[in-house]
Image (cartoon, rainbow, N blue to C red; front, side):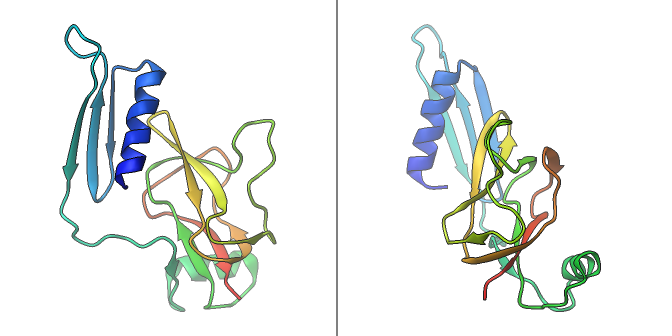
Length: 160
């Protein structure tokens, strides 16, 4: 998370009217409190956590991966070249930005790097999950409005 994203998060929280928001990922922990003592000021604490083993999203799936094997069994396709796009955070997975909007991607959709694939809601904040690869969506591994865990596979992408 870079400084601009943190600043945007602070502004969003200040406008939303909530008094406190905590956000924690593997590499950063943020607490934002609004409406400080008597002056309505913002207090932000950012703690950089140790960079033990930062996950990369998406990651190349190995041929013997249980995730790929399960996906192959379900889809009937056997291609070790697929890339798995995984959830960078814990939250609720949404395939569209609003109930009356179309899905961001479908099976068979061609995607480019930077395209929004889905939204994950975490602590009342909606996070766009963007593709870090170009290719074609082969399989969507999560149902709409389902809870997802950190590092849970969301999509299989054929980069060819």
